[in-house]
Length: 163
Image (tube, rainbow, N blue to C red):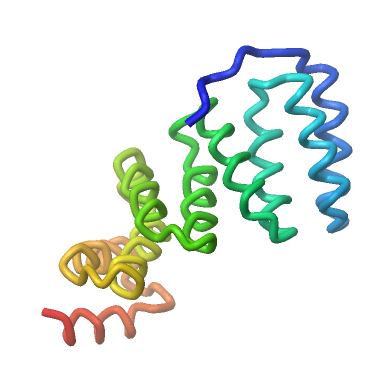
């Protein structure tokens, strides 16, 4: 993990950030990425610039850049729920399921009621890491937190089939 950066020129960074957000909304990801990178150079402690850079890079398929951006965002705000969750999803997509599981465990330590993290972690344990005993409590948490979860029937079936 990179060290927490020192603040820079937020006013100058905000101009780049705003143009990046507009480009991202218009799905012009290479422009958005360039603008977010410029914003983060102006203010290395600009969490939102790194977070949005991660989103834009992920959407463009640049997983390596997305991972780096999320790591920088988390060095600024280690408890940011969406940054940690998206970091975990990107790790999973990049072929690092164990690291993704570790990030989801960290997220759940700070946000134990986060249903999507329990569900994603249970799926990782059950389907990619083949650790059914670790998956079980997370699937149970999903049902406790959201009994009408869209995958509730499948979860109940899985729990029955994996006592």
